[in-house]
Amino acid sequence: MRLFQDRDIHPHLVVLALARVTGEVGAGTALAGERDPEELLGELAEVVRRAGREFHETVQAEALPTAGNA
Image (cartoon, rainbow, N blue to C red; front, side):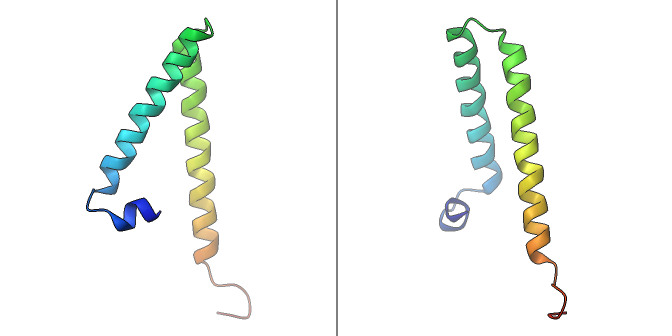
């Protein structure tokens, strides 16, 4: 989060750069391991999707007032 807050770079550009690097590493890993790159990239996409959903749920839960504090 500090990367997003301390820089003049738009967060969307940071995310796109990280996604590109992640995709390149995933494809390289698949090729090095003699796996189908599309299969590995699909698995990688699911892991990223799941992590994003979990993070979103955590942030939402932390933002909700708790009983007794409302």
